[in-house]
Length: 576
Ligand code: ZN
Ligand code: ZN
Image 1 (cartoon, rainbow, N blue to C red):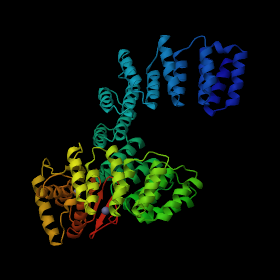
Image 2: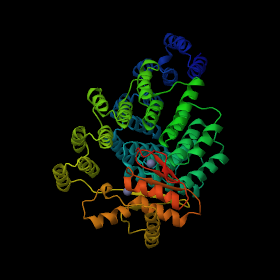
Image 3: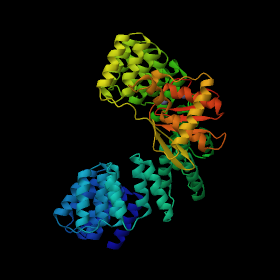
Image 4: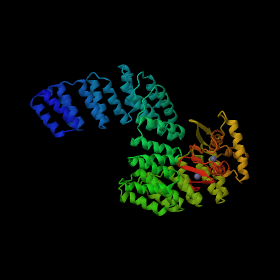
């Protein structure tokens, strides 16, 4: 009888048969079998697998004797069902009763900590694991480093990782994913290479993390190589890996390759479509973005909030005010997606770029969110383009509050005053900039050459080939000056005298990265540069001229979008 019921319970658990499971439970009570620990454990397991935590807990509470398995099943079930607090409370109870525990108990509780970023509890559990000498267990260690990395404690995570003698594939991929989550892309790649040396098995989690790392760094060569590995490993058909591959190519400026992967993908989900639509939109290929948006709906998929961010920003790029407003309404009315702050930000951008500065300001004033720095920044930029110093002042004041360290805002405002010949205000705002703590320039650009990422700061001195780079840059500038290129001082953020300004502008990080690219890349190869801030007007102009004299395609990814320069023109249409 007992064996029979136990087999039935296991069958019910496997197939989530709730009704049948409850009948078994009734039989067990009738037969008085609930005092048997093994049978009760199976009952708990059955209820947990069916997602019924309360009856599971009732069985658990009534048990005269709980073995380790009962605790583990119950804690594990709470964790898996997102009930972190219950899992932690039960663990504390377990400790109070001084029941023995093992590595599975601890790794379950740690997973509960990860879900709610409970760093305090995690540290306590870490200490506890050390005390019980199970901290070097691979399950416990992996769970520990996962919690640390989810709580942004990367130093601790890496410490745990290094101290583990035995590391599983999950250990490696958790650590790599942790680096990526914390935007430590170079560390992620370094660890991945280390893993390759020790024969780490490629899995879809690691590969998709590595594509994200390459996307973050704009490391196209590296991404290409991992793509080849993916091809060999045979995970290419996996929808999530393929989507991260599309995203990687798009973010590395290789939109054609992104589209090739996208077209080859047999089954596409919303993530794949979103990656491609957003790729086109950020590359200024807005028509393609819109076409895909329509196509996606024809295949029967509904757009989500991510899709609408791309579509609205494409409208902004193309100056489509009416369409933009229409989509902004349609998303709620037809697709029942409430607008979030990013959608409002796009709307402000659409209106501002089209010169409807007052309308943009009205949106900011009436929307149900606090305005972000990006919104005020967009409004301020529109005020510059459409000469509206009054609104500019309002936008700038908000920006000064939100971003006290951004010198660009001060300079933008003072340039607006200058354009309106209000010299008194120009002098005032310059003075304000001098007094403020605003940092002058944290511009950093990087370029990948032969699989290695080289980064440059403004006025870089450290790079081993720096003399050669400056020499090349000077030659390029000389040639450009023949084509009537002039360094525009107004774009510079440095509060220094004119001659020095000239020098600093000449040596903006993206220009240095570009010169290095010309020295290092084969003739005719496109130059791909990443920049952490918005590209300045002068560098934008420089790249246009550079695309003429070097006859190369130049792709600059700045904070917001891609600029594809060729034959003296940029894909952004000088709106960025
Ligand atoms: Zn610049
Ligand atoms: Zn551009």
